[in-house]
Image (cartoon, rainbow, N blue to C red; front, side):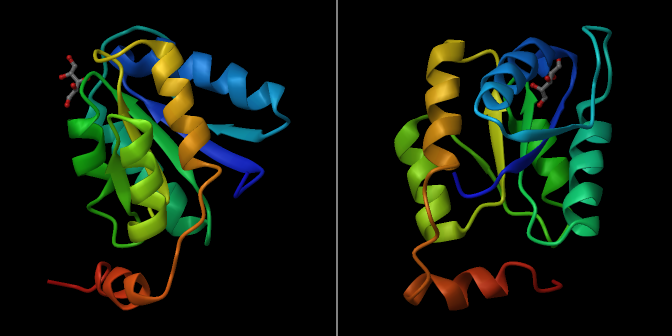
Length: 147
Ligand code: RB5
């Protein structure tokens, strides 16, 4: 694992998957920071994407997982923070490349696509893959620049 502490956040649509991921990671001994939501009551995905963004901003070198129905809305919200590199991953290959090439620090998942077993495989791939650095480092360094 590239980290032993992972923050989780979801909206209502992502809540069940967030809980499954929490159980999987807890069983591996990973410390979980649960930023909510805490049940299936309808909430705004943007608030939880921003909670993750603020967490990553406040905690240098930290990692997170965000989940909403598609993974799109919550990742747009999180990526408004310059410290966040949230990658919406649809497969283990996406997860691998998001880490190797983009040094992604937040994994975004859509709960309405694929089964939870595949999502867990994506989590596993993401958090066991190192950033390659090299030619990718300068590119990644520019991602947080003000535009
Ligand atoms: C909630 O219905 C849904 O819009 C949300 O989970 C997400 O898919 C937004 O991008």
